[in-house]
Each structure stands twice: as C-alpha cells, then as structure tokens.
Amino acid sequence: MNIKSIGNQLISNNKIVASIWFGLVVLALVNAYNGHAYNNFLIFRQSFFHLRNETNLYLTYVTQYWDHYYYSPSFAALVVPFTLLPVAFSMFAWGIFDAAVLYYAIRQLPINNKKQNFILLLSANEMMNATSNIQSNGIMAATIILSFVYIIKQKESRSTLMMLLGFFVKLYSITGLAFFFFNANKKRFILSFIFWLILLLLCPLIFTSPAFLIQCYKDWMAALSLKSNFDITVSMYHNMVDITLQGMIKRIFNLPALNKWFIILPGLLVFGAQYLFYKYFSNPIYRLYILCSVLLFIIVFNTGTESPTYIIGVPAICLWYVLQEKTKWNNILFIVAIFFSSFSYSDIFTPWVRTHIMMPYALKALGCFVIWVVIAVQIFTRQFLKVKNPLEFNH
Image (cartoon, rainbow, N blue to C red; front, side, top):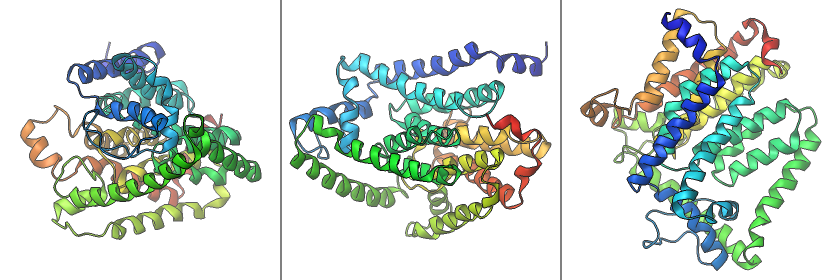
C-alpha cells in the first residue's frame, strides 16, 4: 500500500480525523495543566466573578492571574458555564469547546467530506498549538466561518449572532460583515444584527447593575486603546507579539517606527477591490475565496496577532488549496505556506533556527501573506471561473 492510498483512506475516515483533532487537543490540555500554563483561562473565568461583584474587570489582580482582561463585559457574562466546575475540569471543558466549535464550523463549509477532512487534518497541529495557550482563537475562527456559512444559507439571524458573539470576544470578528453582500434579504440581515447587538450588549445585566455595566464598557474601550499602543511599542522587542506582515517588515529591515497604516491601508485597498466583481457575488468559488481572504487578512494585518491566532489563518490556507487544481506550482505554494504558518515555530527546526531566525523576524506570517496575495491575484484575474464543477461547492 503506497502513501497516496494511505492518505486517501485517512481523509475518507471521519472517525480517524476526529480522533486526531481532539486527541491532539486533549494532549495539549494535559500539558498545559501539568505545566500550570492556563493563565488565560483564569482570566476568562475570573472575569465573571468581577462582573458579578462589580469590581473593575480591567485592573490587574496579581493574586488571581497575571496580565489583563481585554474582552468585553458581555464575554464575562457568557463564560458563566465555565465557572460552575473546579478549575481543572472547567479548563478542559473550555479547551475542548474551543476546538469543537471550530471542528463544527469546518464541517459546515460547502465542500465535500474529504475536503473537510483534509482541512481538519492539516489544521490539527495549529489547533494543538492554539489550545496550548488556552485562548479563544478556535471560537474566533468558528464565528467568522459560521457567519459566512449561514449567510450563504440565507439564515441571517444565525449569521449575525455568530459574528457578534465573536465581536464581543475580539473585535475583529466583525469582519464577518464582509459577507453582507452575499445575502439576498439585506433588511432582515440588518434587523437581526440590531437585535443581537442590543441583546448581547445588555446580557451582563443578568448579573450586574446598569451603572456598573456602562462603566465596564468605558473601561473596555480604554483597555483596548492601551493594549493597541502596547502591542505596537513592544512588537520590535517581543517575538510573540505582532506576528504579521508589519511585524515581519519591521524586524527584517529594522524599522521600529514604521507606521502600521503604511501596511494596513494598501491591504484594505486590495481587499476592497476584490468586491468590484459584484456580478459574481453568487459564484460559490468567488465566495469561498472571499472567506479565505477575510480569514487571512486578520492574520496578516492585525497587529494583535500572536502565534496561537494562526488557527484562524491555517484553515484558510487549506481551504484555498482544496479549491485549486493540483498543479506543481499550487502544490509548492501550499507546502511553503503551511511550512511557515504552522510549523515554523515547531520542533521541525532546531532551537537555534527557531530563536534566531523564525521568531525574531516573524516569518510565521510569510505563508499567510503569500496565499492572501495569491487569492487577490486569482480574484482579479477571475480564476474562480475556471474551477471545474463549481456546483460541487454550492450546497
């Protein structure tokens, strides 16, 4: 039995794929617990008690955890199910939930089962990396993907709920609005958006007073402003912050004072230009290209991107690849992109290479950037019209 045959059998077996996905997640959770590396979860968990007790969510609580809480007051209310069990059990529940919602989201993509399995298998390493930090990046990727899926299915209420749930965790999930133009009933979309926005804004009132909630939102805006300035300031000197196109350029060319807008504005112009092909808004391949472009844009241009955030970008690279003809050029592009985006910080390299080349120059961003550019070129040259059997991607 050759390698190709084994690979085909592997991506045809949902149970094996799920076992690998969740098995690596559980392994990462065990390592995190044994190494006491679950500070992020403690921040999430304690935020509910601060909300309930009406103590400032955004102060430093050195006896409870290190670092700060940067999420919304609504998120503090939504994590309540993970406060009902002891820390050890609730930490495992959170990590598995984070991975499960992304697993579910990928299963909802309008592609066949084998393609879904391919994405899950090639993203499993990055899901394990993300889980090691006990963050919420799996949830973030899932909310964006599901907002797309439900838009395509004309389920406006579910779509807007997904993007706003993500927004109240990390603001960039609002990029789900990029799929607005794929919706047929825009009035229903807008009304659903307003409904969920009000409901999620006010849901902390179940546990706290109106006056304290208003103060919480003011404190949240102030905390986000401080965090943004902090990320920009330390990005030249801290290898695990600003792993983006901007961070890569800053470090390679030693440009610590580089203004982020010199990078972000051209990116926005290129991204916006992809919508000039409005007559193809109903084309299933064009839509999937836009989904990939949105997910990769978050990685490439968001100065808050860290290594665990790449679970948002790696599935996009894999999704792009399953839409391509398997030419030599596309195969090389994919291998290089996955190599940098998912394995550049792994034990594939010696510690010296990781600590002196890959991390100091933010080369993890290179793969996502290259594929984002390729997608833009493919959209501008209307390569999506050349995909065989496009109806296969329209269910």
